[in-house]
Image (cartoon, rainbow, N blue to C red; front, side, top):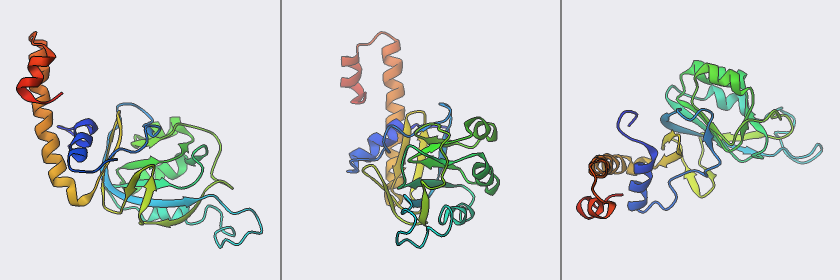
Length: 214
């Protein structure tokens, strides 16, 4: 996949298979455009903390189960989190360095990150809404991990395949991954033929009529 594919044909293939929303919201972007992430999902559920005095057992523990969720990562998994306020930073360089040390494939957040320059130096593929200095304290509590979560219209389950590049993050359901990847590779080959035909002076009408791909 890393060598032969991009998210665009994979997304197209999943839509052909009946998955109406294979891509995460477009606000979730790589910290650097050439970043690529491929790995199994380790989903993490956040909630905004309940104000002091409210009935919530996580309030007595800063960040809830955040540290436990980081340590639950396995090599080649993608830490993918949603549920708290998107405007706050969800991970900084200290947590990112631990994610990197564990050997995880990358981080995908429905939120911001902080310490972006240090994260870039780590070389950890990181996808988020952007960078912002506001930290986790009082804004995010992790309430569960290795669980099913939602980001936008997309359901992410443990073990689903996460594929991200400069065009965004694609979630490939485990039961459909073989068919989706096979179709995406076939479409990529046809698109190469179309590209060569256009470069040779063919019209897009002729190229599409011949290859049925655009």
